[in-house]
Image (cartoon, rainbow, N blue to C red; front, side, top):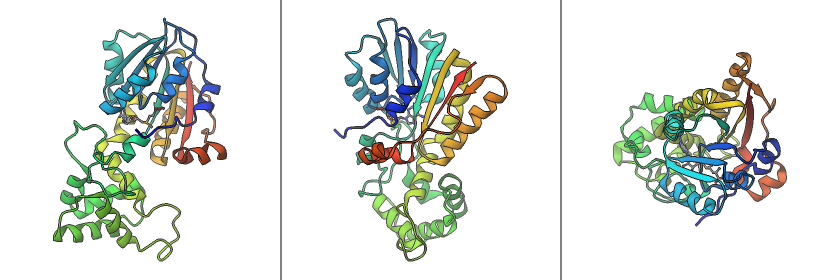
Length: 297
Ligand SMILES: C[S@@+](CC[C@H](N)C(=O)[O-])C[C@H]1O[C@@H](n2cnc3c(N)ncnc32)[C@H](O)[C@@H]1O
């Protein structure tokens, strides 16, 4: 199994300490890395309620957390439904909500998930296998303008029209079914790195991000989580969100600012916390991570 290293774990545990009877909701339990760290400080009265849309993540977290003293409840659910799930468990107030967005290393490496352009995999991208629409459905069925808009809006790629044109041209010959095919089409649309413009990231990064956001409805789900959190947190409770791209981070930043203006939150991180050079050298996933924390008044 690919090991997932919990990102910004030190920074997070330095900022937030929980009393032994705290109730923590880990909205993205993943492999339970962060929850394990916080769980070690909880006693038998404490609770960790973990959510994840991926049943393999739930299974991995179960193994990781099984020896903790606190109560562990794990549920396969989208965090957009955090409100109803918390109420169903009879939890009244939460001390800490954590969302470590994005993907675990194991998911990126999982060929069935079809998320990576570094290996050739079926073009799928559904983190929740219960969803119906795959990335292949979108690239083969959406009209050219919708595709360009999607790549622009969710990938912020200024070459979106050109990429969409190349995708539509390619699929008129044969359907696009693998991540390798799509990555090659995007590279052709943009020219190889260094030819058209200098790129520090793989040319297909933004297109892949756009499709993943669309397939998994990521921004809308995050918006729902942020809205619910204000009601679910108890007085002085914390919310911490680790995001990995600017669209997510902007949503979090604006939500915290608005709630601070309305006297609901106090922002703890005036600027987002990012990983040290040392952490990045041990864990490349940390390079784009931004941690923001707010406290309920
Ligand atoms: C970066 S990993 C979390 C890693 C975890 N913090 C750890 O230390 O092991 C993100 C997890 O969130 C899950 N996820 C993504 N979107 C979700 C959503 N809308 N609702 C619930 N879980 C989600 C993914 O399946 C993945 O397991």
